[in-house]
Amino acid sequence: MIANFWQKLYRNGWVTGLVIVLLITFNTLFSAKGATTVEGFESGSKGSYAAADVTLSTGVWNLNDALIGNLAGDAKSGTKSTRIRNSGRATMKFNRTTGAGTVTIKHGKYGSDANTTWQLWCSTNSGSSWSQIGSTVTTSSTTLQTATFTPNISGTVRCEVRKTDGTSNRTNIDDITITDYGTSGGGGGSASVHLTMGNPSSAGTSNLNNYLLDKPQYAVGYNCSLGRPNWVSWQLNNSWLGSTPRQDDFRADTTLPSGCYQVKSTDFSGSGFDRGHMTPSADRTSTVAVNSSTFLMSNMIAQAPDNNQGVWANLENYSRTLVGQGKELHIISGGHGTGGTGSNGTSNTIANGNVTVPNRTWKIIVVLDTPGSGVSGVTTLTRVIAVNIPNAQGVRNDDWRNYRVSVDTLESLTGYDFLSEVPTSIQSVIEAQIDSF
Ligand code: MN
Ligand code: MN
Image (tube, rainbow, N blue to C red; front, side, top):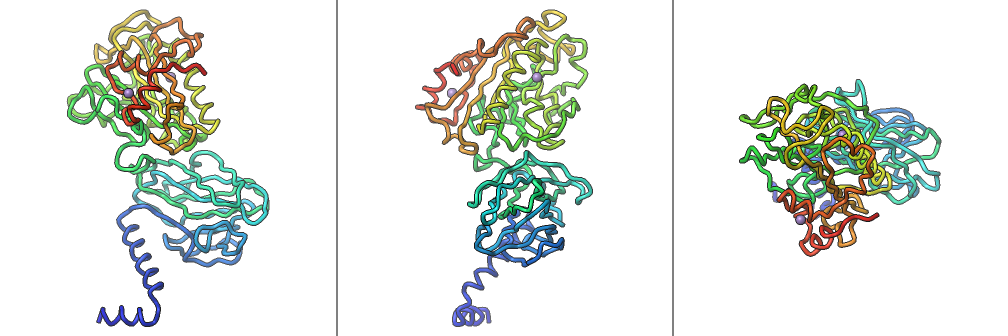
């Protein structure tokens, strides 16, 4: 019976049709398991711009001031893409229940139309309210380009593309690809994107003083005895930046293992030290959840106010200007040693001894010219900025450039192997140099 069916298909030259049926079946199975959603606009038809629902391979979408185009002027992969005009939108009318880690969207200009702008918005309440993800994209090429966003939203989510320039110039959008929450990252494989350059202390889950907190927004090597991170590592590119305001919801990290003291939001009160972010709030503004994650106390060290608010903050701001120039950064920072000088004088510990105040604050910034290039984007010419700054008052107005050191110096200080995923022949060159830009 089945063999007969196949023979019939073959005889009738319907192999192409069969392949399409199999692809759709595979796609359905994958969706059911909650893997990547890819909407290529190939299976639906909508010839007018008037707002209407259309059933596509991933589910029902509402296309408002948007149609499905298949003309020569449509920028597309395959034979169709959606074409949006004015302030049109392409909106999912269904939820994913496995969240949204990374979203990539192909976009191109229609025909000879002028440049356009658009944004990605997502909703966690079935479309009642929406938050913008990342920043506004400009479409300036008739060849499809890929824009990458990092919502890092867990659970229920749906998203939409909003054309924002309002002009009659048309934009094509294609291959909207959404990965599950917790699987984002361009590094390939299971490792965190924030550990692309390596896990400098081989942190894992067996040692409470070298304990890996593998968060979607950053990675931490935590030290329960010191009540602070040994290091925090994070990727910084445009996809993490948006318009979300600072949430200021400092709180204990309840994901720390049993037997580990959970530093409280109030533990630094009156100590003379700031709750000093390692992954800065301002590096994580794509969504409320992403920004809020930086206020976990496992991301904090007891930092002298002059260090935190002055020289350290200036280096953080400088880092974001590099992202504004199109760079992707891989940053790792921490505190070293015991005893700093805050606004109330010198302390070795605070919070009844639960938190050890570091003596120095250090940071390493790998500057990739090509976002997404990972370790293979690191060459002997790659810029690496490393600093080692006293955790003390009096440094507020100092230039961070005056505290630059080599990565080798920080490896000697901390005992860690930084950039361990970079080939050793390249490490030996870039770790010996001191940035002089
Ligand atoms: Mn800070
Ligand atoms: Mn190294």
